[in-house]
Length: 136
Image 1 (spheres, rainbow, N blue to C red):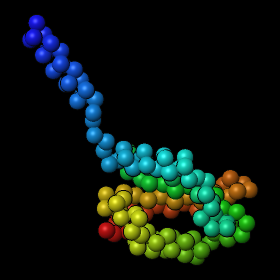
Image 2 (image 1 turned 30 degrees about the vertical axis):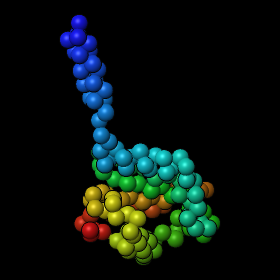
Image 3 (image 1 turned 45 degrees about the vertical axis):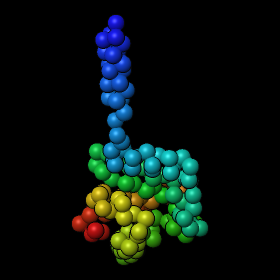
């Protein structure tokens, strides 16, 4: 009888321990950004730019920020090669110096930013930064 009880207790412990799988870093990133989006978005980062969501894709290891622009930034004609280059350089500089992004940069993830028009819904700007660009 004691052997049966011990066997049931051991089997139960194995089942419980098997179900207590540790969350991977990628799973944590995905969960954290789902929670961030639910709690913090949408939110204005400046008078013309609203952060609509942030999400992490485990398969591509990409952290994406989705923005909507309005007022003076909501004009497709301003997105010249020169202005797009300036936006690219500013975001890259900010990413390189960001202490808050260090944990993600240390993991070598890719950062993606896209900006949509409030009036047309059209994508106006799309930028991706890899570890090779932002360094470590």
